Length: 120
Image 1: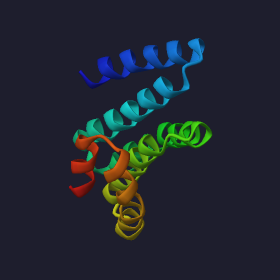
Image 2 (image 1 turned 60 degrees about the horizontal axis):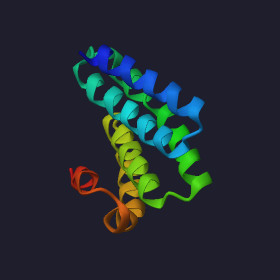
Image 3 (image 1 turned 30 degrees about the horizontal axis):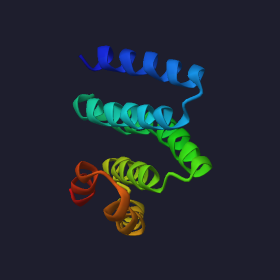
Image 4 (image 1 turned 180 degrees about the vertical axis):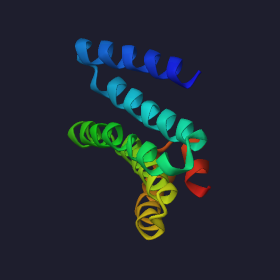
């Protein structure tokens, strides 16, 4: 069902971009990155790093939108997911640095689910 969810999100993404709704676009990009990250946990071991890396373009676009529209909470959330990508790719030091830099802002402005996710 991962593919079905991905298709639905991509349709929503196209609609948001067409309608000129950057904040909804950023949230959908974040959800796509999460979907790819979660679905890649069931991927074959030899292709896992590549499937984790597939989430990066969505995160980078989300971060760019957050910077442009000064969405600090969403930016902190995206950085938390970025840290998770680095952690799953066995890049522990950058992951810890991202979490430590992002956590104060996330605790102040982020959704409670993502705050808990950061502690995992």
